[in-house]
Image (cartoon, rainbow, N blue to C red; front, side, top):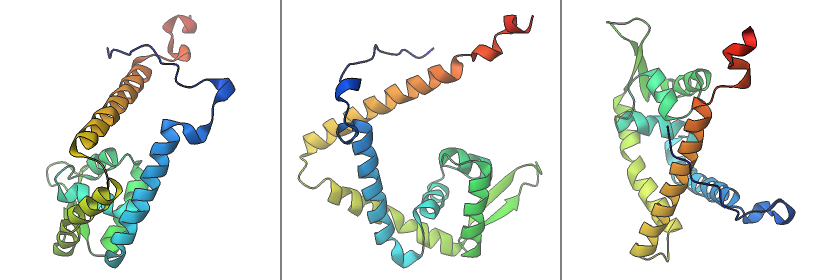
Length: 174
């Protein structure tokens, strides 16, 4: 079972200001970075929703529809629509597994491989631009803090997943 540290009291209901919350700031930053990435990728005709799965395929993080949906945090329907668009652009193709007909593999086309190969350079440039003025030490400290927040979030999610809902109590059925 994941260890959860006691909650802090950095925020208080009576003085809560959403614009000062870490979550709000992270969301705003992510939104601006995403917009910049889309601007940089405009020449490729790839949207934010499309370049992410394309890059996940290219980098070997997924090879099936189910894996890709999981690593992109999308439901199966959203992933199917995204793959429809990527296939229409000639960037990938779905191939049914010969050993298990339930499995659908995804393969990049040569055009998809070329488009995906440009993504790391664009991501590096955009992220470096947003980190302008940070020292190497500040950058590493920031990553450490963000990883700690992510670890806390994952621990909370794991705990919520492992905690049975009140309706699932077997004694309620008696």
